[in-house]
Length: 409
Image (cartoon, one colour):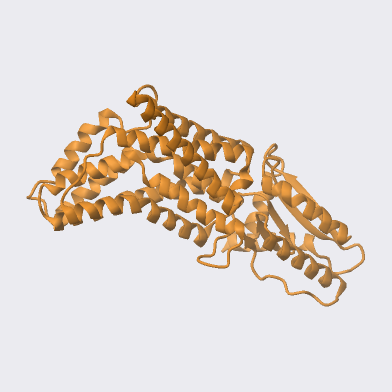
């Protein structure tokens, strides 16, 4: 209760900065927190300057927060007072409201809020002001502007490529191959559903944790560079594995873990296990494997979380996007699982398959790393997102074609 009262008092103080009852000398204050490395922040500046020029009552206070910690405390206090988490930039506070990000809709709402505040000072007619702060959120399925549409498409593309993870597919095919020997579709279904459910929940928890950290600190410029560097490193290592598999640094399941994986999977073929016992054994085995796989699977979730956090997306919108990510990610494994269930056959997952998948994933990751540093606005556009993934996939296909041609000689 005391904490709530303190927030209310702080908000009241902040609101007193925004509008003053007497028209004489009163100002409408816009407090903008931004970063020099944020393209959305830079593109928003001319709009704010033009808004202040049109309305002499408007005073813009801007606080750069990536190169100094001087304004961090103010940012945190104002964010908490407005009921939002301090994280992504640009974040703008005006007329008792908060906006995260920059888009045509956000600019329209800022203009309405400014007109409302000016009207309140002059005692004149007031425009309708939005009752809730606006964010760069995703509304499914319709009514999306190009920026919001692009984050849905980006989620679909990243999750789909992530779904072809060689580590996860290797484990799944190994698991189903052994369980198939039981000849029982019921046993296969129980093990497969339990395994996929457990691994997806752990993967989702990992992604949510990464997102929570990044959404809180992404306004620091070095964090954005760190995400890009992580993506580049992850991608280059995977591309290297296509040419020199398991030589040097490699993002694969270590040989030291494989005996334990084999032992855990073989235990599921014990016919004495059934019902709850089989479910429990599968959950334990899947949990251990999910943790072992993380170094091999962590690349795309980190990059995706960074992109989503940069849009200022949170709450229910993030949950929907995460659910979409996991559904698409699991779709590949679900197809493999259903084929095994219907045919009682499982094709062996070979090294050449893993190398090809690593090349595709690595090229996409390298492309995303370059774009995040050189042209982040490309990911805000539908055609730009498609172009980034298309070029990466085309490059991977050309590399494989040239390699096969060279090998056939």
